Image (cartoon, rainbow, N blue to C red; front, side, top):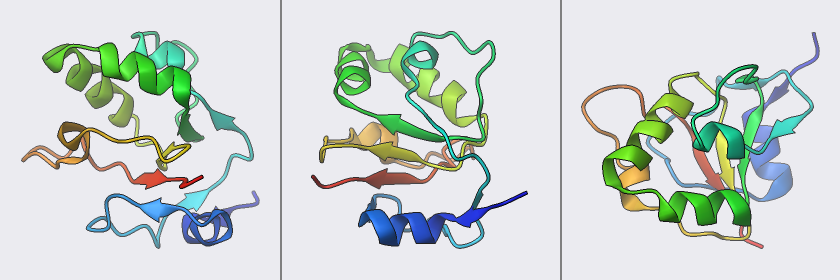
Length: 117
């Protein structure tokens, strides 16, 4: 199986690591496709391919901004419980501090990256 180091993607795409306290060097990407998790943000996880890089664009971001407190955190918790390689926020979209903050539990293991375009 062909893999690419996440660090190479970060370098090539000039991504900004929003969670620098999490080491990304051991992460290998094995899927050439990416996923925009709109359905997962709505709570539908059937057939979810968690091996893919997750991309948050304008649509996903707008939906996330409308989610209320505990519901929004619960959906993000469920998304990140699948051990996805990383979540990339496109277009320099702002990321809520409550999403980036690492609570005492380890569900927020995900790597958050930003594409500053």
